[in-house]
Amino acid sequence: MDKRPIGIFDSGLGGLSAVKAVIKYLPNEDIVYFGDTQRVPYGSRSAKTIEAYAREDIAFLEQYDCKLIMAACGTVSSVAVDATSNVKEHFIGVVKPAAAAAAKATENGRIGVMATWATINSGAYTKEIKSIAPDARIFGVSCPVLVTLVENNWIDTDDSISREIIKRYLEPMLKENVDTIILGCTHFPHLAPIIQDVAGNGVTLIDNGFEAVMEAKQFLEENGLSNEKNHRGTYQFYISDKTQNFSMIANTLLGMDISDKVIFRELTEKL
Image 1 (cartoon, one colour):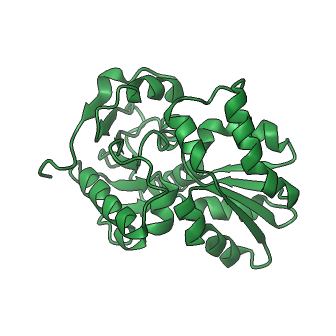
Image 2 (image 1 turned 120 degrees about the vertical axis):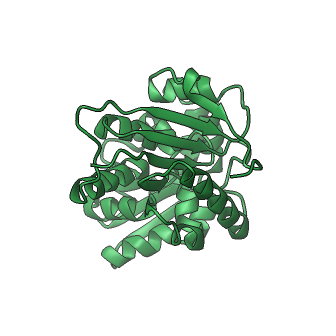
């Protein structure tokens, strides 16, 4: 057993979809979450900038002696290869597990990817899927506005504006008859009910954060690193900017009040 926490980071609120999965499927594990609210979003940045941000985010979490670090960020997992390949702790990104799940789920070999511009431009999902299913056809769509919807809590299934934006993004993929869609940014699972409704029940959605957590669960169990079964997981949330809405929206996304667990910490502070 290993009592050290799991470290999770993202550019803002999106990675809370992975946190929610850890709370549900790994309830005995402690979590240290870092949301880089000062610099959200990452998806429109250059590869050089994303690499730099990823290094700083990882260094921040390494202060807390994590037994595993997860980039609950599709952009970092797709683009920041140098930064994520040199992590001292066991590292898990969201691209590989989601690509594997999509390749397994598809029946017609036509897979859609909804992600940020940087992720789509990197071709990371296409590369991973084709390494498993060479004949698969991948249709990627950059969906930057969806990040903004989540960061502003526009996730209600009755929100007509969010629904119309999602329809516009899904249209090209649905015309290609995809039967599987990867939610390639961890912000997007928070909009999954609307996406599923628009796409139809015949389309399988792949939650990249959930798939990463399932990989983490397997790793911890196989290596004897799971926390004690009688231990109730504890959670600490750090943000890099004092955004007034982080706690409020996080409470909605997680279904629990974390107001007393959110700490502001500038990345410029000495690590």
